[in-house]
Length: 251
Image (cartoon, rainbow, N blue to C red):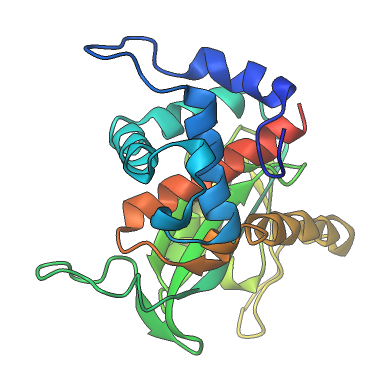
C-alpha cells in the first residue's frame, strides 16, 4: 500500500457501499480508481498528472463525476455517518482561495460559489460536525456570504435535547428560535449589541475547537485547501470524499 491509499480495513468498509449494478463492460478495479482520485485531491495535482499506476486519467475523472451525479459519494457518507453522536454538534465555516484554474466560469454560471472577500476570490465551506469532530453536513457559499443563513438550515434535523455550539457569527434570532423549537440548547456567546441574557457555558464552548480541527484535517488535502475545480458540485463531492476518509479512519 502506497502513501494516501486506502488500507485493507478502510476498503472493507467502503466496498459494500459501492454500486453493484454494472452494465456493459465490467468496471475497472474500484479500489485502484478511488486511490487515484484520493491521490489527486491529496496532492492538488491536475488530473493529467495522476500516476499511470492508477489507470487512465479519463477513467478517474469520469468515475468521480459520474458517481457524484449519481449520489454515490452522498450515500456513502450518509451510511457511514448515520450512527453519529448527536448529543453535541458544532457549526463553523472556513474560506479557501479559488485558484485561477477554478475561476474560469462558463457563460451563464452566476458565481459557482465563488465570491470576493479579504482573501480575494474565495469559497466558504460550512460544516456541521459531531462531538468527535466528524462531519455530518457540508455546504458551499461564496466567500463573502454570511454564516447565519446556513447555520439556520443546519439546525433542522438536530436531535431533540442536543447541544449546539457555535461562535458569535451564529448569534441570531432565527438560529436561536429554530434551536428552541427542537429543544436544542444553543451554546452561543451573545454579541455585544445583544439586549437580554442567554444561557451560555464557557466550559462547553471550549469544545468548539473540534470543528476547527476538522477544517485543519480537510485542508491537509492540498486539492481542497485551494479550490482548483470550476464546478462547485465537484469540489463539494471531493470534500465529502475526504470526509468519508475521516470517518472510516476512526471506525
